[in-house]
Image (cartoon, rainbow, N blue to C red; front, top):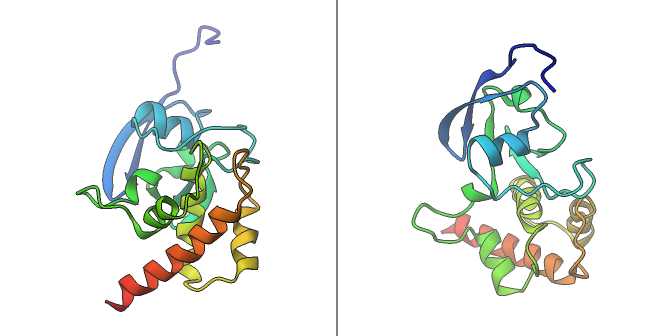
Length: 168
């Protein structure tokens, strides 16, 4: 409801997936809705809208962030990475995406973008995580389709692929 007041939308400038974007957002619009609605980056999914399910996870300045809990105006000037930023410009899958594809680490795919982003952050800081560390990161994501075993296997495979990529 407007209550007769003028819109309080303000310009927002972000770097998303290595590109500069400008848009406008009402102060109450969350980052996930801004990415999806204003910037048309629909890979970030919105599930519970309470920060519990993890589907909306993106990286803000390199840190996993629940896009449904952060306001778009709070991200002003930040570097944001979404699932769209993982693959190469030519469509070549990121090693994490490749591993999930190879080992069937997804089913319906709704939770997958958020999981991929959390895994990307983890593997940046822990290139050879234990199963317990992987499961700890995954505990912040709800997947209703899998038993998580293939996801854990995919993360382990992704770690191997990333280490091989860095060694080359």
